[in-house]
Image (cartoon, rainbow, N blue to C red; front, side):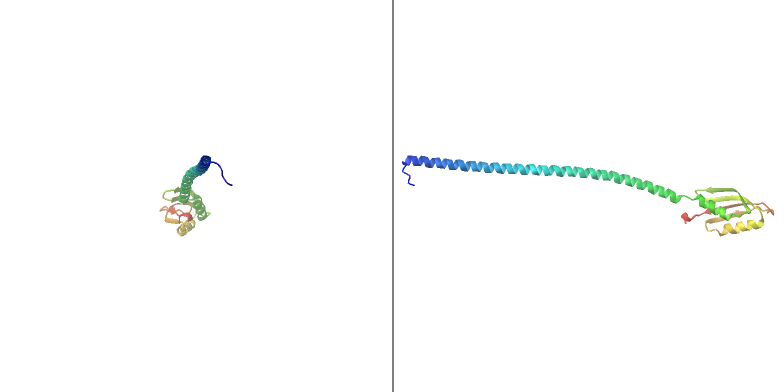
Length: 179
């Protein structure tokens, strides 16, 4: 195509092409900047959302840790109470063991008048009567052979009648749980 237009029109057409070209490049540049700005805004929104989610998760975890610390404190408190209860039961003297042991030791000839037990010293004091002197000797031998009794002391009156002999015995009782 041959352009037969006068030079001044050619110049106007070139100027118009240049202006259109600059206008198109300007629009393209503005669109690129706008797309870049929108991308940055989307990234910013996404980062803020992730940040808020992480912050929320962190607060939730901190509250869980706080709750766990409260539960841990309660568990430690309960463990302390259980330890105290165990200690209490370990320090207990089972008087029923003592009563069973004493009732097994006393024969048919022995009548028990008094039995006392001191929890702190674990001392047992027995008093009663024995029908015969042979029964008193058997009681003495039986008491001396017991492994649960320590510091055995059997006292009898200086005058020993033939029947209904009074006696008093004291000893320290050590049961199986205390050995």
